[in-house]
Length: 469
Image (cartoon, rainbow, N blue to C red; front, side, top):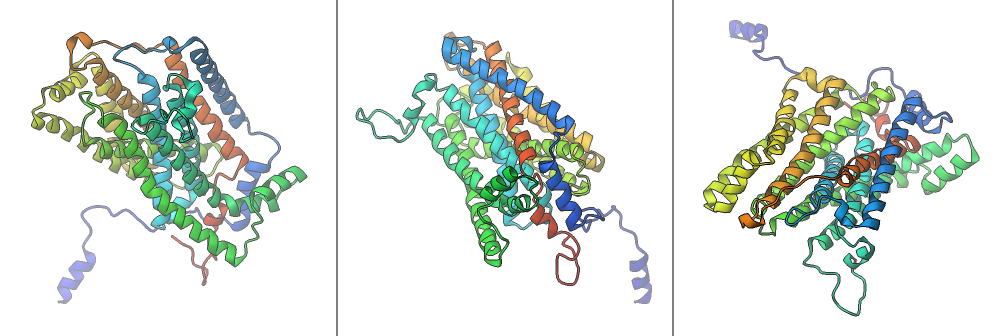
């Protein structure tokens, strides 16, 4: 027995074991330094130079978006690359892409809140800001591809005498209800989480205007025990509502495609396929913005390598699930025996737009596999590039889904190709500028890090002086 015990004590593990007890906050961070750093980023009178140049570029792109939208509304939708049957390629692809980004950000924040994951504290505000900016961009494109945007109110359930609109069998109406419900829940979840930090900003305000504004927004928060109890209950309740709502909203978005009879769209695999793609795109965007905020505002002691590592693992896991869907989908089409679905698989991989399919395979499914190496997961620059390529790949996937199915319908006499115009590109790149404008304003005018949650991770935050790991 002694020999066996000695061999067991001296035995070395075959594989290296990664430490899971690393602290979520770097040593040396205190209550005062944390509060001072976050408050200073918001209340300092001088605008950081890097933030100014980024915001200036985002404003320029947003102006391009506004100009292109004005031209489309004034001249007509003919300035876009619409033809029959390949119509509304860019607006629908952009809509699905932005709602994916919004859904992924809120799902990450809500699920980590429900499972009480301590590492969410440093990134949940960034994820929620990504969600809000993505919702705004996504909500504009259904109005654009409505065609007659000036009658967008027809999609709302308003009293009308003709009893023609709204048409509840139209996917446009489903999108309006889905986005509206999801946006309301997301704003409430984001604002409820902000209340303690808004009160902190009020207490550290240096001018009457900032004191009044933050005091008004904090709704009289005083930090009393009953305030904290209600805040905790409301946060868990909203997270519980938002989590299934995320799956529901993107399932409704997938119904826009799978209820049609277009080859390549009419499939029951679309709901889980769309939800998985949304999680991959959303978490990748959160990782992209997290690495940028971490480096730009020097928050390496608050957003540590552990946060980057966990985000990378989530991206890697979702990409593997997405790869399984893409491997399984051709088998479903072959097993169904439907000639048109089989041909749609061939068109995607070897047709005129096959470059979009293989570009997505490379960027959306191949690039995430680099995250198997820990060096790529914890190095901010490498993770930034990987996340950026994944986000680009996810847009190409939606573009591929639109253009390959619509350009090769049932009848060969109905086939047509698609070419994007300047208006299409301006709306796409301009919406990216609009997204960045909203995101940069949110992290500049409001605390980008939830101070009250980070304080719970610091020493002396629990009885006995222990810190939460």
